[in-house]
Amino acid sequence: MAHALLDTNVIIDHLENRLVNFDFGNRTYAISTLTIFELLTYPGMGLAEEMDLRLIVNNCEHIPVTFKIAERAASLGRTRRRKSLDLFIAASAIEFNLTLFTNNIRDFKNIPGLKVKKI
Image (cartoon, rainbow, N blue to C red; front, side, top):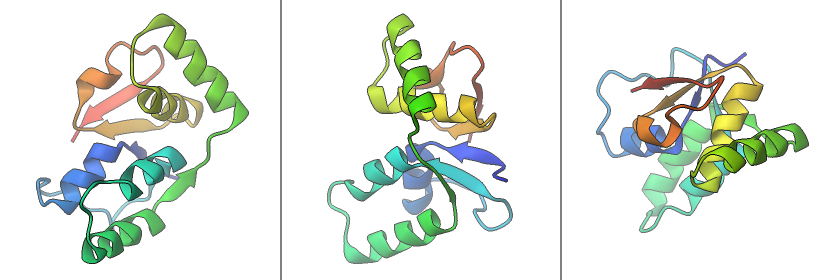
């Protein structure tokens, strides 16, 4: 079972060497399939960066977007203004009772039932 759900920005910051003392190897992390989409569409990514990205993605547990997650994200979206992908990521963390690791706490502030940790 995964230790936490990683937001897209955590993986990008790791790949760009902006994270200090964050180890992907010692714990099992989960990512949403929507995070995989966001990462693979990152502008200007070269082949070496894509290979590094795929290594991280392949070492994470993948959480698919299910009907329940879509319903929860829609419910969250009716009560707060957030980007759709952020709502899906928050809903995934809530659904699987995972702490969301992110560098952008503001996007996930005041969402009931969501545990958030800044990395």
